[in-house]
Length: 562
Image (cartoon, rainbow, N blue to C red; front, side, top):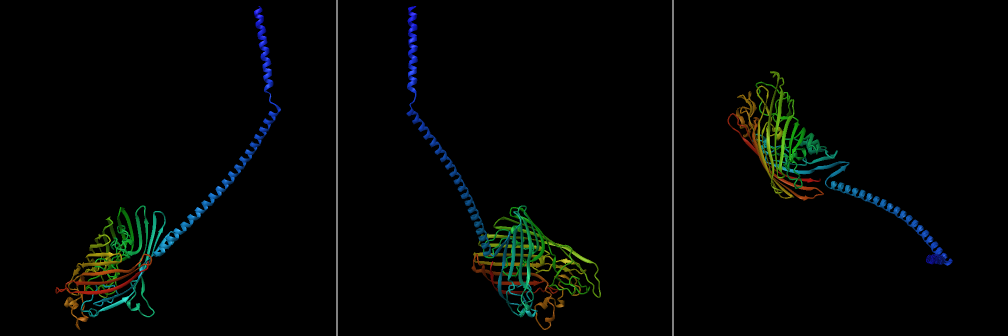
């Protein structure tokens, strides 16, 4: 019991001691006033620091806003400056383009580019036998001995071959292009008025056509007056001696090969320009086909006997074999062509033509020829252009057969009359070739030759009065036949030289030298030429077929300002 009492006393003592210790510790943990004041001041300082930080944060936020505004302003200013710089660059680029085009003889109006072409020419020429033709215009119509012109030499000079042209190209859309060409020369009017006081050379329209090109579909349409589709296409040397683009396969008016440095002709290769509607379709890479409807202009030739005494309506007068007339044909000439360039060095082409000749006979005092007459005919050609040695030597040639003398060069007539007044086609054979050497860019040398032969057509009758057709041995030469062509005497001056041409040929050599050749101011060409031309007529009833020839020397200066 006493043990339990002792334990209780000890527990109470321990509890009392613990309570006393806790009170003492609680009294010892209370801060002093000084500590409270120090802590309070520290907190107040921290509050001031927070306020300062808030103010600084606000200040920095405002600065950010100002900086952002300045950055936006700077960016806007930079964007504006860039726009102005781009606009100025575009203006500069456009100005440069315009200046470049002006330097090349071009202008720009909106989306239309205008380019000029042509030259100013002065030429003079000598012929052994007088043809009463201008310089650089020697033809196959060389006179025979029977004519006074045969014994007279000829010298001519003048600027009639001066040319000026305007070409336009307009981009109607990304795929649609519109082109046009208008060109004149001075080869119209008679020689008698050219140098007379108060008169002058007369402008002549050479080209006036428009073209629509669809780049996406490969269709092209041409309408107007331009080189006939029978004229060869290809890529000969450029006017300034440069190598032109290979566009001959496209069969368009701007890609024809007209190789003569002057207005003369190579037999079988003319410069026929005709009113036409042409459609071209690209059928493969560097290959195209074309069809052209062209004005039916026909040269009539041969003999029209006097026994029937009829006068053709076509001329309303006695037949004149040297005149050009349009027939009463009901259809245009239809010409089809295909062009192909296997590589940039070679060009091949072939064309064919369908024609109609038609006439209505007139009424004379003695005889009426009733009804009408018409005939269908055609022909074709194969041609090539090859760069034998690129930039050094080119070769160009063509061969053809058909009734198309006028379409080619007018040397052989197209049609003659039968004894009934019906048109009879005259078939024509021809071959031409040329080499063009390029020693350097400022010198080209042309070696050209051609031959053309007409075949007999519609021949009937054994007397002058009953002779019809082309190549009739009993033609208008009378009993002496072609003898009158070669003998000049008092009686022969009044005799008739039949002169139905059977065959004609020529050769020529023409250097084209450019003593001045610049990219910005054009070039000056000096082109001397020597040419030999000859022809032979059909045999007469005596088997005599005389020939005649002529030699021409021409000197030409030509300035190309564009």
